[in-house]
Image 1 (tube, helix red, strand yellow):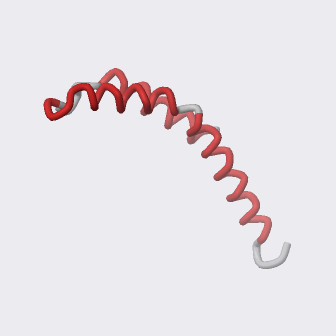
Image 2 (cartoon, helix red, strand yellow):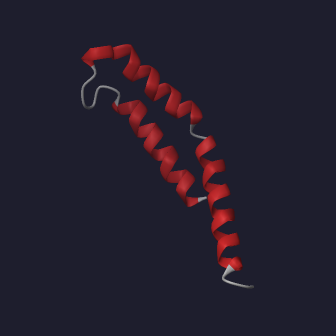
Length: 65
């Protein structure tokens, strides 16, 4: 391993796993976005709390992959 190339390979693999995990969150992100968009200018903190919580859980799960 020259110049820490093994460390870089490990980081690249971790990055690919994270991207793959985040791809699983597309449905949750879409649901949250649709909820916010449906509210338009009336969106307020907590208005789409259920959708946000599902997205947050998905992101947290993706980070652990």
